Amino acid sequence: MSAGTPEAPTGRIAQMRQAYTITKRTDRTIGLRLLFWFLLVGGIAATVNLVLFGPSIIGIPLAVLFGLLSGTLAALIVFGRRAEKAAYAQVEGQTGAAASALQMLRKGWNVKPAVAFTKQQDIVHRVVGRPGVILVGEGNPHRVRQLLAAEKRKHARIVGDDIPVLDLVVGNEEGQIPLTKLNRHVQKMKKTIKPAAQTSVINKLKALDAMRPAAPMPRGPVPTSMKGARKMMRG
Image 1: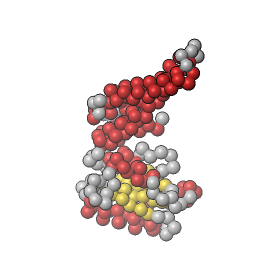
Image 2: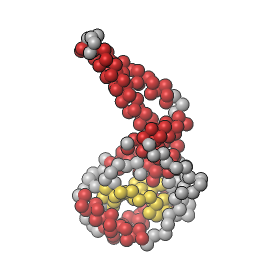
Image 3: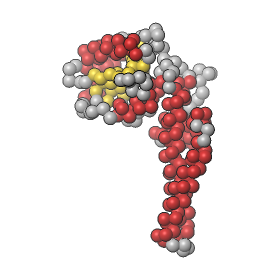
Image 4: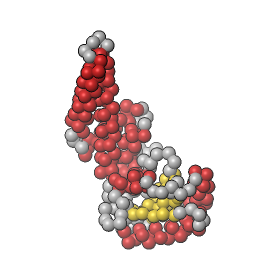
């Protein structure tokens, strides 16, 4: 590991602390938001518990316990969503942002960043999942669509006619997928292949990848800024 690359935190608390620090940079009110939801949901849960069990020797401790647990759960849910939003905001517009977002996909998806690129830093990433092979382009819309078309032909020759090869462009223009909606869009794509076929496709594509030059993906801010939020949300 290079001296300029910070080490990722290993403990759960350290990961959450890093995610909070990242979120705080773009969401100054995150602390107040978490406190609000903790008190609101915790207070409601405690009140409901008192109504059900009454202010008895058992009822009061249960109300406190349920209030704390419910409030903490609510705060964690809000924190996860705000952390994800903040992470996207920090990398949006940077080279490799789509790759960083795609790597937040959970199990069942094989993500290969920068399978193709141009000198102008137009990049195509690849995701293999139940929908088939998904090529994700980012960069200049005109150049990246040409790059996507070339990659679709290459991938189609490798995987065969039975495996769909899909493509999309990340961006905020018409016909493009915003970075913040990229993973949700990919996950909602129609599932057309079985897990066994997915594994076979990944193995076939390794031969194609072996013939490619190393991709000049940026190191540092883009992948690292997503890491804390990604680990915190995955658990």
